[in-house]
Image (cartoon, rainbow, N blue to C red):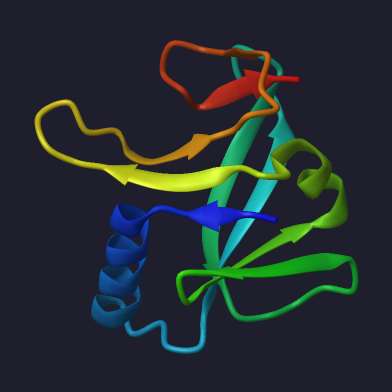
Length: 107
Protein backbone atom coordinates (compact mmCIF):
# COMPACT_ATOMS: atom_id res chain seq x y z
CA UNK A 1 0.00 0.00 0.00
CA UNK A 2 1.02 3.62 -0.58
CA UNK A 3 -0.32 6.43 1.56
CA UNK A 4 -0.78 10.19 1.24
CA UNK A 5 -0.83 12.75 4.05
CA UNK A 6 -3.57 15.36 4.35
CA UNK A 7 -1.15 18.14 3.33
CA UNK A 8 -0.03 16.19 0.26
CA UNK A 9 -3.66 15.46 -0.61
CA UNK A 10 -4.48 19.18 -0.59
CA UNK A 11 -1.44 20.08 -2.71
CA UNK A 12 -2.16 17.32 -5.23
CA UNK A 13 -5.77 18.52 -5.57
CA UNK A 14 -4.51 22.08 -6.08
CA UNK A 15 -2.05 21.00 -8.81
CA UNK A 16 -4.65 18.88 -10.59
CA UNK A 17 -7.08 21.80 -10.55
CA UNK A 18 -4.68 24.59 -11.58
CA UNK A 19 -2.82 22.57 -14.22
CA UNK A 20 -5.99 21.10 -15.73
CA UNK A 21 -5.01 17.49 -15.01
CA UNK A 22 -8.45 16.03 -14.27
CA UNK A 23 -8.35 12.26 -14.65
CA UNK A 24 -4.64 12.09 -13.80
CA UNK A 25 -3.11 10.12 -10.93
CA UNK A 26 0.17 10.32 -9.03
CA UNK A 27 2.86 8.00 -10.38
CA UNK A 28 5.70 7.11 -8.01
CA UNK A 29 8.82 5.43 -9.35
CA UNK A 30 12.23 4.53 -7.96
CA UNK A 31 15.35 4.89 -10.09
CA UNK A 32 18.98 4.07 -9.46
CA UNK A 33 21.09 7.09 -8.57
CA UNK A 34 21.43 9.85 -6.03
CA UNK A 35 23.76 10.05 -3.04
CA UNK A 36 22.34 6.96 -1.34
CA UNK A 37 21.84 4.73 -4.39
CA UNK A 38 18.12 5.06 -5.15
CA UNK A 39 15.99 8.11 -5.90
CA UNK A 40 12.28 8.86 -5.94
CA UNK A 41 10.40 10.28 -8.89
CA UNK A 42 6.86 11.60 -8.76
CA UNK A 43 4.79 12.58 -11.80
CA UNK A 44 1.20 13.05 -12.81
CA UNK A 45 0.11 10.47 -15.39
CA UNK A 46 -3.08 9.24 -17.03
CA UNK A 47 -1.92 5.98 -18.62
CA UNK A 48 -1.59 2.67 -16.78
CA UNK A 49 1.03 0.05 -17.65
CA UNK A 50 0.62 -3.72 -17.42
CA UNK A 51 2.74 -4.10 -14.24
CA UNK A 52 1.30 -1.09 -12.40
CA UNK A 53 0.16 -1.42 -8.81
CA UNK A 54 -2.79 0.89 -8.03
CA UNK A 55 -3.67 2.28 -4.61
CA UNK A 56 -6.06 4.90 -3.31
CA UNK A 57 -5.71 6.80 -0.05
CA UNK A 58 -7.82 9.76 1.06
CA UNK A 59 -9.32 9.95 -2.43
CA UNK A 60 -5.91 10.21 -4.16
CA UNK A 61 -4.97 7.54 -6.69
CA UNK A 62 -1.33 6.47 -6.41
CA UNK A 63 0.31 4.19 -8.97
CA UNK A 64 3.72 2.54 -9.04
CA UNK A 65 5.33 -0.15 -11.15
CA UNK A 66 5.97 -3.51 -9.52
CA UNK A 67 9.76 -3.06 -9.24
CA UNK A 68 9.41 0.35 -7.57
CA UNK A 69 6.72 -0.97 -5.23
CA UNK A 70 9.27 -3.33 -3.68
CA UNK A 71 11.14 -0.22 -2.43
CA UNK A 72 8.17 2.01 -1.51
CA UNK A 73 5.72 -0.42 0.09
CA UNK A 74 4.02 1.35 3.05
CA UNK A 75 5.55 4.72 2.12
CA UNK A 76 3.64 7.95 2.77
CA UNK A 77 3.79 10.85 0.33
CA UNK A 78 3.88 14.09 2.32
CA UNK A 79 4.09 17.77 1.47
CA UNK A 80 5.87 20.45 3.45
CA UNK A 81 5.90 24.16 2.71
CA UNK A 82 6.83 27.28 4.63
CA UNK A 83 10.29 28.56 5.48
CA UNK A 84 11.91 25.15 5.74
CA UNK A 85 9.53 23.37 3.36
CA UNK A 86 10.89 20.80 0.97
CA UNK A 87 7.83 20.34 -1.22
CA UNK A 88 6.80 16.72 -1.74
CA UNK A 89 8.72 14.20 0.32
CA UNK A 90 8.56 10.47 0.93
CA UNK A 91 8.34 8.96 4.40
CA UNK A 92 9.66 5.49 3.69
CA UNK A 93 9.84 2.96 6.56
CA UNK A 94 11.95 0.67 4.36
CA UNK A 95 14.80 3.16 3.94
CA UNK A 96 17.88 2.29 5.96
CA UNK A 97 19.71 5.44 4.89
CA UNK A 98 18.74 8.74 3.27
CA UNK A 99 20.83 11.61 2.00
CA UNK A 100 20.70 15.04 3.64
CA UNK A 101 18.41 16.48 0.96
CA UNK A 102 15.96 13.57 1.30
CA UNK A 103 15.89 12.89 -2.44
CA UNK A 104 17.68 9.55 -2.35
CA UNK A 105 17.71 6.50 -0.10
CA UNK A 106 19.01 2.99 0.40
CA UNK A 107 17.26 -0.17 1.61
